[in-house]
Image (cartoon, rainbow over all chains, first blue to last red; front, side, top):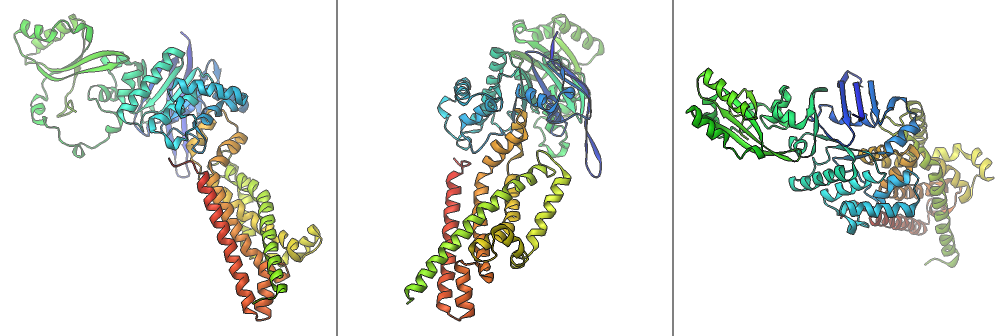
Length: 358
Length: 220
C-alpha cells in the first residue's frame, strides 16, 4: 500500500518564557493515497499543530514527516514552498483576501506558481464552476455567506491541482446545513479528483460523514486510530468511547457534570446503572431480520432498549442500539452469544447515569 | 481688505506649503515605507522574525521621533545645506521635514501591516508564497485602507510641521503667519493664514478618509 503522508515519532514543543508546552507527543500515522482521513480532538489537543506539521507551516521539534516520499525536513526553503504549493489547505475562518475579488482570490495560488494571468483566469473560472459560484466571480468575500466563502477557499485550494487537501476545522464556523453541503463537496472532490483529504475537526459527525480513517488526538497524544467503521463498532480507548458511545464531541468532554442540564430520564437510567448493558452495531441491510424481537421470544426474557439510532458512517447507514440485559449472568452470556451469532458487533459498556441520552 | 501684494504673497504661501508638504510626504514614504515594512516583517510575530534588525530599527525610529521638530530643523542645517545647497526656503525645509516624517511614517506603516489577519498570511504561506510575495500581494493590499488613512494623518502632521519651518525662513503659510502675525503684530494676516492651514488640513482629511472608505471591500 502506498502512503501519501507518513508521520513518524513526531514531537512538537512550544517554548515560552516561563515553560515549554508539549503540543504533540510521539505521533505516528500513515495516510493512504485517495483516503479521507480524519483527525479529531478537542480544542487545544494539538490537532491544528499536527496538520500544520504536514506542510511544515510548523516545524516539528523531532520526528519525520514524509509527503509523497519526500522527507520534509530535508527540503530547502524553496523546495518546501514548491511542495506547499502542491498541497491545498482550507481553514475555519476561510482566510480569503478581503480586499480582492473572488476570482483574484482563486487566481492567487496560480500566480504564485508562476502561471500567466490569462491562463490563471481561465482556470479560476473553471474552479468556480466546480464549487458552484460562477456568478460570484467579481464579488468580494464580504458580500458572500460563510458557506460561499468556504467554497471560494476550496476553489483556491484546488487551483494548483493538489494531490492533498488539508482541512483545518473547515466546517466549524458553519451552520449544520452549510456544513452538509461543504462536506458533500469535499466528498465529491475526493471521489472525482482523487484528492487525498485530511480533515481536522472536533465534530464526530464530520468524521462519520466523510472519513474512512480517523485518528483521535487527546492532549497531544494519538490515543487511537484506524478505520472509522471499526472504531465505530469497537471503540477501545476512553476517548473513542466518549466520542462514539456517549456521542460527545471532544469539546464536551471536560464540561463538569453539574454544569450540564440534567437529562430528563436520569432517574430511569440510574435504576439501570449497575445492570449489564451492551451496545450493538449493525449495518442497515441486516435490519430485515427482527433480531432483538427474535431474541426476546427465544429467551423469554425482556431487554431494555436504552438507545437506538441510525448514523451515516463513511457513506453507509449504521444502526446502533444500547440494550440493558435482564438479570442472570448465564442468560446474559447466552444473549450476547446469540447476537454475535447473528453477525452483530457487540460491545459491553459501562453506563453512568444519564450519559447515554442526548 | 488686503492689497494685491499681500494677496499674491498668501497665494504664493499656499503654493509653498503644498509643495513642502507633498514633496516631504512623498520622500518620507520613500524612506519610511520600506522601514515600516521591514519592522512589521522582522518583529516577533512577523513573517521573518529577526530580533537584531527589529531592535535596531525600533531604536532608531524612537530616537528620531523623540527629537522635537524645531530642534531637528536647526540641528540639520549643515546636512540640509549639503543635500539641497541651501538651508532656507521651502526646499531647505523639505530635508528636515522628510527626516522627521520618515520614522513617523515607518511606525504608521508598521502598525497598519500588523492589523492584517494572521490567518490570511498563513493561507498564503500554505500556498507556497515567499515573503516577497506575501508583502506585495497580501500585507500591502490587505492593509491598504489603513495605509491610506495613515497617509492622511501623515499629511496633516507634515503640514503642521511645515508651518514651523517658518522659524528658519522656510516659506509657506506658516512663515507668513510668523513674520506678519508674530513679528509685526498684523493679526489679520495671521488669522487668514491660520484659517487657510485649517482649511487645507480639513480638505486633505476629508479626501483621504473618503478615498479609503471607497477602497474598502470589507463590507457587503
